Length: 196
Image 1 (cartoon, rainbow, N blue to C red):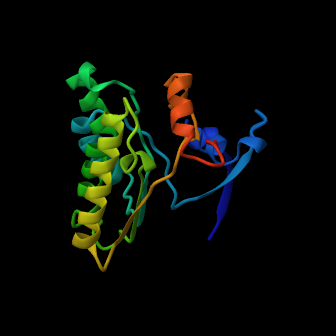
Image 2: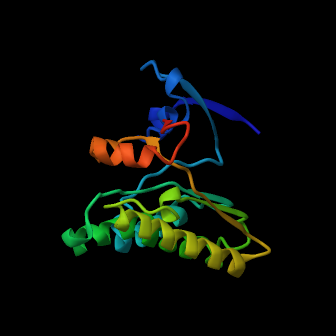
Image 3: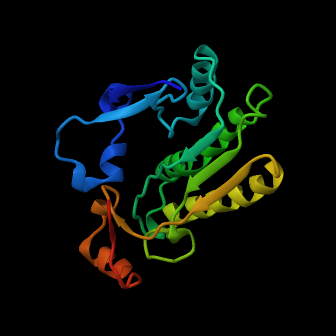
């Protein structure tokens, strides 16, 4: 197997390197390893209708077979129940849940079905813990967890499907919270919020 060295920015506009190790993020371009079998791409997960076609076309055009899939996406909008907004709720569910379902649908099609072996969803502890104003995000992550349990049974024993439910982490999402909301949530974490 031959590995080619590339800069992460040459293969994706993602901030994956920043998420993995902020202490090493000094703004200096770093060399990452890339194998010919690794592909980076980004799609608008809130646009589920176009996602399915775009991803299918991308897979066919590049003759890609996918054996592992990690879905790490989330939109958080803190709104009290009296401020229900169907458009915002739809965007949250499209990104957090429906995009996952659309991608899995593509990955279990006949052309890729035998290759897929591992699926991991990044959910949230909020799917199990109640926080005022967090009902849309929490319910979307709860739906993701339920979906995971169902497809884990449906795809077993050939595909292993799991969810990870991290607790609160200081990210761009938590920056949308008021200090009062952060304080209320942080009471549940003896070690405080995690850092990205």
